Image (tube, rainbow, N blue to C red; front, side, top):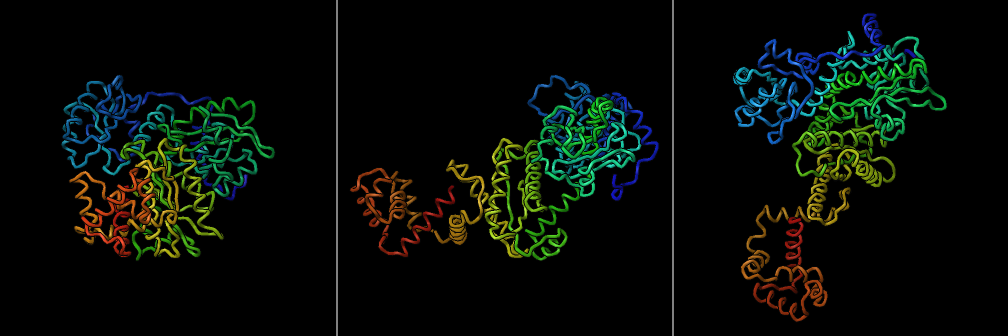
Length: 559
C-alpha cells in the first residue's frame, strides 16, 4: 500500500481486542446508561437513579398520542412536539411508567429542570432532556443506532466517530483492507494496517478521498445498497474482489463499508463479521456525521451571507473559494408536501440536499449547496457557451432523480445570472419567485412544469411585481375594475368576464362570444352596458392598457 497518506496506526491493545472478535461479536444486555453514553447527544438525565440507569433497552419508539401502544416495554420513547405542562406530557409520562418504558426523551422548551425532575420522580421514570435546538431526526437515528450498537461488544480503544480507527479495527477483524464511503462517494475513513494487499482502485480512492464513480451512478454500489446484508462484489478485470455492506440507521442510508476480499477460506467468516459490525458502524458514522455538521452549518451560513448580506458577500465568497469570473446563478429546490414539520419531511429535505450536492459535484467537480429553512439552494457556475442550457439540464436531472428520495414532487428553479457576488440576492429572489409561481400553478392544477429558469416565466413574474406595486401604493382605489367587481357580486352579472374577453380578443365580437358561450348580440349588449354604466372609453388606448394591467395582475395574483 502507498503509505504517503497513512494515518497513525492503532495501538497494539486496540488490535488485540479487535483480533479477539474475529469469531464474531457477542450480544450483550443493553442498559439505558449504555445507550446514553453511546448517543453522546448532550442529554441531561432528570432522574438518574441506579434502577433507572440499569433499565434494559430493547428499541426506540416515536410518541403519537393517537397511537395504541401494543408494546412499550423497555423502549426509549421520543416525545416529539410534547411540552411540559401540556395534557399530552402528563399522559405520556403516565402511560410510559405504567408500560415499563426505559425512558422518555423530551425538550425543555422553557420548563425548569426542577419541574422536569419532579415529574420524572413522581412517575418513577427516566426522563432525558435534550437541548431545545437538537435535531429530532438526528436524535432518533442516534437512539436507534445506540440500542443496536450497545448490543454488540465495542471495539476497545476506538473513539466514537473516529472512522479511521474503526476502519483499522474492521480490517483486523475481516483480514482485508477497509474503506468507509458516504452516499456521495467520499472516503470517510480507511485502514492502514501493514501487509494487507490492495489494488490500484483502492490506492487512487485513498489518495483522492473520493470514489472514481459516484455511488448514484455505480452498479456495484446499487447492488450493495439493495442487499439485506454483506455481499461479495466480484473483481473487475484489473482489480480485486470486495466484501461490502450498506450501513443504515433508522432506515436512513449512511454509507457503506468495503473490504478487500481476504480469500475464499476467510470469506464466510469475514462476511459474518461484517454483518455483525453493522450496528457499530452505523453508530460511528452517525457520530462522524454529527462532527461534520459544523462544516455543513458553516457552509450554509456562508451561502446565506452571499445571498442576504451584500456588504460581507465578498468575504463569504473567498471563504467558500468561489470562482465568480463567469458569473453564478442561484438554484432553488423544494419538496411539495402537505406538511413540513414531520420527521420524514426533515429527512427528505436532507436527502434532497445530498442529491443536489451529488449532481452538482458530478457536473462541476464541486458543489456549493445548502439547506436554508425548507429550501435547498445551490450556486451554479456559468461556464461554457450555453450556461443556461446547462442549468436547465441540471435541474431536470435532479427532478428526474427526486422520486428516489420522496414520493412527493420536487420543484426546481434557477434565477438569472449574477455577474458578481453583489447580484446574487437578485438571482436568489428570481429563483424563489419562479418557485412560488410554479407551486401556485400546480396547486391550481394548471399543468405547470416542475422545473424552470427565471426567464421562462419572466413576463408573468414581472407583471406580478407591477400588481404588487399597484396594491402597495393604493393605485387601484375605487377604479372601474373595483366598481365592476362590486356590481357583479351584488347583481350576479358577468361584466368583468366580458371585459376580460374584450381585452384578450381586442374587441372581436365573434371570438368573445365563443369564449363566453353566448350569442354575438349578447356580447354587443354587454359591451355597450360596460361603456355606459361604468363610463368606460374602450377606444382610449391608455384606458385599455390600465384595465388590462389591472385585470391581468389581479388574475395572476389569484393563481
